[in-house]
Image (cartoon, rainbow, N blue to C red; front, top):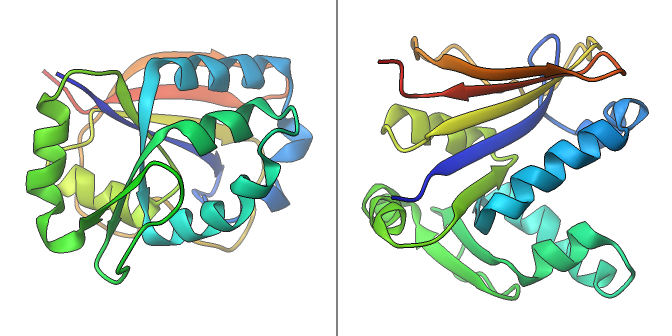
Length: 183
């Protein structure tokens, strides 16, 4: 069975919005290797509407520029959950209507293949947790208080998680992996 794994750059105060404004001073080879390892396990991406629209506007223009992430993101199968989009036209994209996402993602998890990765889309991650569809949550906790911005959790109910691995990078970033299997 395939797993859905969400990954976030997150500040000490729980902000996941606009990491491009605070994340890069902490990026190093250790973090790059960890992100690369996560990418190598996945053969599909799951995205919400906002993340999809932002990335679809940015990454296609970076193709062929020697940027490994651009080549990966442009070529990988993408599943987009949205209640408002009518189409998902970026290369290898499939739209999953928001009213049927639980059933469709349950089917996708049963299909053979690698990990279905997520980066961003905190609203969708909260919905996945609520419906028992998220298998792992990878957080790269940055030693910075951002102060404002969208937080990963916004007062939703308790969700028990189990820490399955932790690494401290030389920049002070904690790489934490949580499983939703708490047994």
